[in-house]
Image 1 (cartoon, one colour):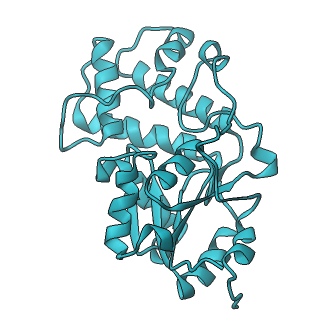
Image 2 (cartoon, rainbow, N blue to C red; image 1 turned 135 degrees about the vertical axis):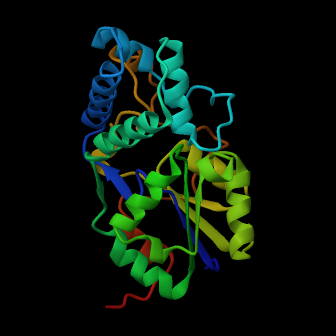
Length: 260
């Protein structure tokens, strides 16, 4: 039986799950389009949608503005490419309203908090998430009363590294003074599994039955681009240590003692 001292979690797709990815991203697009229209945008929604395709997986803007998150810098650069100059307060308003529209189709897994309550008494817990807008992550964790369960929260937009880069895992290990072989990481994506393996951590893949046919969840793709999406799969070098279909399966894997 492996000795596990630490349990690291991914956030979206693991603790927070999409109710409908397609509706979530369409809601994000519609809100973004309306707000840009109020700032002088003249494009049709179809043309705008095509320009937004792959918005979050593009190279990060070169400009380093400490007053803006990576997500906000993406919005600023996107607007400038359309010959629209936005004030900082407007960029922040657009960022927050759009991400909230997207998040309205995301929910907290009902098994998350019961599991975290048990784990907190037995293991060191951390959260590792790829997200370009850190303030939103903290507001959501606060909303769901999740912050208290984690000894360290690593948001890529703050740390400067994204999964599957092992550095975001290594930094978390250092903060909790743990060795890779003492930790498991629970996530739902190829990047989660690959990143954990690259840092020497055992990855546990969560694949919920009702989400196996999910759309790619970390970006918006127009219908034209959407046809190019690849299936969610692993090669022989990227294989999870265990695969689960729901969070409570961790009780058996980690031999947890259930408490009320």
